[in-house]
Image (cartoon, rainbow, N blue to C red):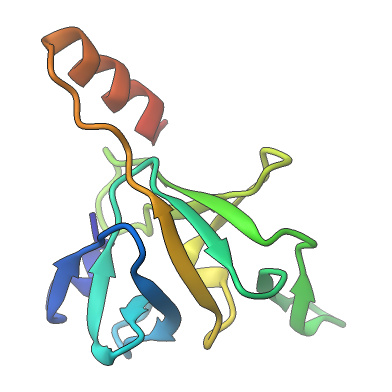
Length: 137
């Protein structure tokens, strides 16, 4: 739910309607904080749908690039990748065009609202289907 580098930070699970802020928690990663308490990381389930107040901006780095760029998107779905690889960032957001970006690469201070949480599986088959859909290898 929260990336490995946020395990030492106070956290809680996301709820529909939560107002979130992208924040650097000083642990080597960015994540979502509760807008009413910036010291609390809000952990999302894979498949959680988010709406941002503005176009999502991401950090750009490189030889001539050092700043931020707009993705042109205001919505994203929270995903996780490479769950079997320890000590690596796993939290991503997936944009409507299918592009994914590590959550830690989102610029700090962006405001988002939790639109929808993933459905809770009932059967073993639903559990397996949700696991496959959520964790992209």
